[in-house]
Length: 445
Ligand SMILES: NC(=O)C1=CN([C@@H]2O[C@H](COP(=O)(O)OP(=O)(O)OC[C@H]3O[C@@H](n4cnc5c(N)ncnc54)[C@H](O)[C@@H]3O)[C@@H](O)[C@H]2O)C=CC1
Ligand SMILES: O=C(O)CCC(=O)C(=O)O
Picture 1 (cartoon, helix red, strand yellow):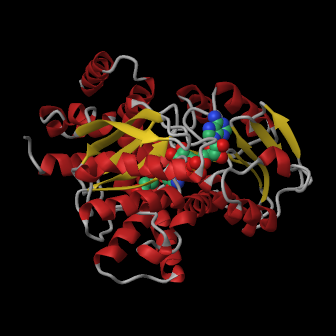
Picture 2: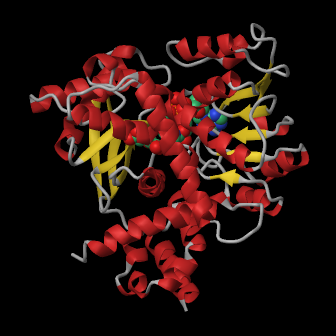
């Protein structure tokens, strides 16, 4: 009965969202996993919870007009998708990338809603961004773009309404520019953004939190299989905030991180990157140029290559959506990979996930394994709200405990005796229980 209804709702979703493949992919994955929960609770269908979760609360779309260094005027499109506010104020990052469109931001907002539910912090889900490409732009141009973007966004956010943070191409520098403009326009100082500089309401550990949290989660996955991170070979994609902090924490735990990458190719370091080399990459201002550091780190730069072709025990995709496809998953299986955890949001295609599942490789979805970033953002909000900063070690302890709890929620959903655990299905079910309960308790309207 419910299978039929899920199929009908999926068809309804596809009909309503033509040309939104990423959004449909994200929603279908969850729908595919929650059938027994829908079966067990009549209200979910009667109260149209699946349909309500398939339509964002609100999509704000706006023009961003800004001037480059030569005085030329440019127009970009800005968005904020306030996806679901049932569990708390809207919360999620901002992405600047030419690929940004409604489908991508809706999938990210949907994923964020489920991820935030798993943190147990009262947060709704949102995502925003622009098709602006910061590549090759000067600092002043980026500042003017951020200010122009905030000239519209400021109306829609606030510390109790919607609290944006960073995502791809939006780091501490961009958050500083966005926050400065927000403060000027509102004439008040409040924690309406997270990822701020430590001098103006930011939190210790926020820059590290997503990558570090990912490794805490991986350690728990390994622990459940009576294994440890020490001496494991780890392949990581990307070379941004998440990838580099995951690489650092993995290396500090005795693992050998052999790859980093970008959209042009892959850096392979057979003996593993040293912590010093990773720290230097983290300290690099601007974009990390992997090709030019290959020689310094005794590695090889391989144009057009991906990390997944190299042997590894653990794969951590930390770059972008759908970066790891079926062939990549097959290569990982053939090369002896034993675990995968997503640092990026939805980096594995559905076919890649099917391949990993078939090979019974535990694979953790980003909504569980990368939840450390938004969790630390939640802690930044808490510190802002009570004007009482926490120390690095207090936050580190809290982050570890939140990630442990996210992992435990997955284990709690694993209802049979098999050793192999379907982390994706378990995370989807645990998050859905919470989001659906919030929606149902608050009635219609
Ligand atoms: N920053 C955060 O706190 C969080 C980020 N994420 C997700 O993690 C992923 C990475 O985000 P950040 O590290 O923050 O961004 P970032 O802007 O710091 O780094 C992105 C990296 O991905 C690389 N990249 C982009 N497209 C690629 C491709 N097609 N192939 C290989 N590499 C590619 C870029 O070269 C860059 O190194 C995204 O999926 C983001 O949504 C998830 C949770 C929190
Ligand atoms: O810290 C946040 O609010 C958002 C982080 C984020 O964008 C994500 O978890 O994908």
